[in-house]
Image (cartoon, rainbow, N blue to C red; front, side, top):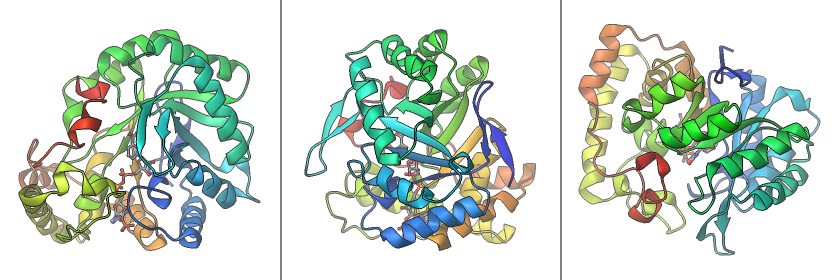
Length: 331
Ligand SMILES: NC(=O)c1ccc[n+]([C@@H]2O[C@H](COP(=O)([O-])OP(=O)(O)OC[C@H]3O[C@@H](n4cnc5c(N)ncnc54)[C@H](OP(=O)(O)O)[C@@H]3O)[C@@H](O)[C@H]2O)c1
């Protein structure tokens, strides 16, 4: 397995990470046995970075990871956990809480659910507008001191917040959406992360399945599915985005690769400091994603990919308006 180092202070991890969110939440029903088999297959293939959030399935995702890691060497996995998202019993979203006392409370529950005594990377899922980032990072730094957390990460924050956070404690990586359809970080956030020695764990690399080549124009999604509300999956936007995917399919076929593999390989090509997270929920999808590590893209291939999906070609914002408004990275 090819590895990459997360930032100047973070851990060395597999060049691809596995995001477990869809195994518990937001992307429709998942099969628990297949989810665990997928995590096992990932670890067996040498993939080390597992990403979760304590609010994915209201704790279910962490319990699933505990089950998958049972009987294995804890050091085999680099576990990245997001906290702060507040849910209700129906799966609704209630905002974010990153107050120092809440940070420590969330971690106490996370450690118990994961069945471990440390988290490799701990990060607030969003900037809590009511709490200075210095206070949140300061609280995690105390958890680092105490040995409960090994590295501090951030998620969906902008350049100014990166600077403020990094002044308090080294930040291993910023988790943020980055793909052929979401290139917003290139202007300011990515250069700032590089200046500060902060790595990037990129999510949405397949634009939540849209950029996988497997998705058709199905429009009937339950309200609990993220894509039922995502502007990119609605009406004419979906048609326009699927047309981009078909253009990319042409390039992929010329490469003897799949659309998903080209989309992942493109993100991998953007820098040694970027680790794509893929949301595979089944072994078949994982195998396809891992195949991206063997795709070699030269300058001509990269130009063809960008002709098929030019910057800013995506139709629709990457989040619905209420969630978009919570993104420090978009201010
Ligand atoms: N920090 C944040 O704010 C944030 C936000 C969202 C996600 N994340 C993290 O990022 C991880 C990845 O999520 P994502 O939304 O970025 O997922 P993604 O990889 O963009 O999309 C995953 C979806 O694509 C479909 N798919 C089709 N072909 C695939 C393939 N070859 N490999 C993988 N998936 C394929 C899967 O659906 P089927 O299984 O139905 O085929 C899956 O539900 C999450 O698990 C989470 O850990 C972080």
